[in-house]
Figure 1: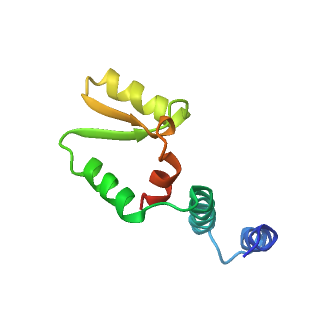
Figure 2: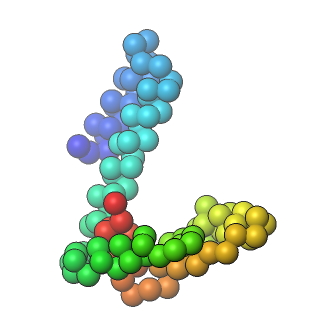
Length: 109
């Protein structure tokens, strides 16, 4: 599905009386989520899926709070601020500084 098709569908749904704003928002968010996932996977290129899956599983299995982040991502910056304000101890793994960062993003489900 190309971008033009997606925009036409979204506009048709927006002007249709059968869809509420809530349904439209949910639908459009899912479409953009899928587009983003496909883009991230294509940027990652070839990588060892088992190695990346194992690395991500290791992060998930750690005790406490572990945050995979980007140094300058506004959402990540805000999350760090909130965790610090609340006094939460956490491990911040900035994947944008890692060689395998694109693969980690693509492997994250």
